[in-house]
Image 1: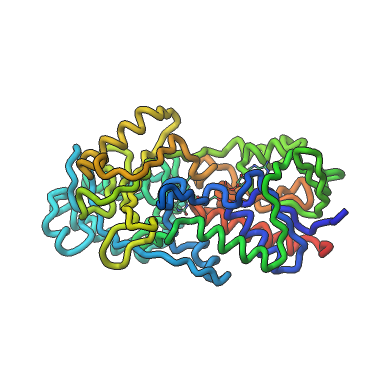
Image 2 (image 1 turned 120 degrees about the horizontal axis):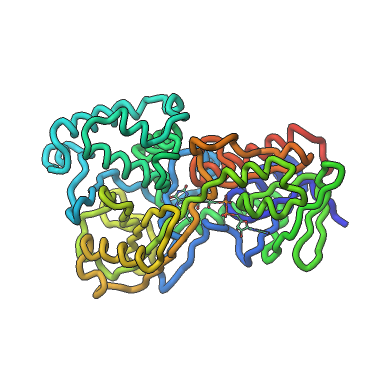
Length: 428
Ligand SMILES: Cc1cc2nc3c(=O)[nH]c(=O)nc-3n(C[C@H](O)[C@H](O)[C@H](O)COP(=O)(O)OP(=O)(O)OC[C@H]3O[C@@H](n4cnc5c(N)ncnc54)[C@H](O)[C@@H]3O)c2cc1C
């Protein structure tokens, strides 16, 4: 039987990234993915010529972007301008992001505008880690004076992190993400599926074995050492190291006696973040001017990812169909019909008559954006090693050490491989 140096459970961005780095270091590497396709939550579905991610995805210029560049990925796409609007009592008003909107917008008082300008300047250079231990709620309520500016910051921080829990969300990482958002994000042509495909190609070039349609049932260990993976159907794969990129609750189930390991506390402390997503393809837009709209009195966001103009739009359809996306950020209780109705009502305000132009729509009532995030109740940052079992590691968006979203997936994947390489001399 072939023995692998590294077996990776899950073929999303974390799994593929870990596989590439492990193989580059000379490890015999295998990825086991339960779905028939790779990519996890980063897949893109093509429907009637329109490329729909599982909800709009923006690549921030963080750990993931740096890593993909280091790996030589093309990352074709475009960076939208940061000009944006706020929605307040069903009115759409410019946010003061440039000279003209600064002067003209009635959204903020002059005091509020000056305070915003001061914070935008300060944020660019600020060491956000000094705010790691306090919540966004505490940061906003103690640092900002203008009441409407507080609403603006709640919306900006929520949108750049997807988290609707200001009383729990650690301010430092969220402010760092906002710093990155202000530098501009990347919308990828033809969606994040292209990113998955580029990673897949690279993994194959490095000799990684990629197995889809293989659901892992257990990670077997003995004498506190990993030795194999058992797949549903009974196939057993021998491996000296295993990296789990599955959600914390699934990782816990896959490992016998996980309750005696750190996986137990990582699972208990995890707070998943979910959103309802409405993605729409329209023949043409009833109203052209809005790229981003932030809900200021409701937790929603609108983005027109394929917007015409300069810089060139991201290519998200084969025939010029315009692609817009909306999110409703969710708390603990969710109601699919209510969320869909709310998002449609926002669209009625932002793009009146959109139904007459409809080509295709996708509604995803409850997508898990991340399985955990840096919150102030966290006892410890997860991973990379599950120290009680030699050779067992975790990665994924929940195994964050301060990073957010896909940056956490990629950074944790690299941490797992780096620690694994430093820990044991394995077979190749
Ligand atoms: C609506 C939405 C919007 C988002 N927007 C952004 C954004 O704008 N910017 C950003 O940076 N990030 C964004 N994200 C987050 C980003 O998509 C995820 O962080 C990233 O794709 C997660 O990758 P991962 O590899 O950690 O996890 P996953 O993609 O979930 O990969 C885990 C894999 O494990 C597999 N698996 C599970 N159980 C088993 C098993 N028993 N055996 C084998 N395989 C198994 C799953 O099928 C899956 O493929 C968004 C996510 C969503 C849902």
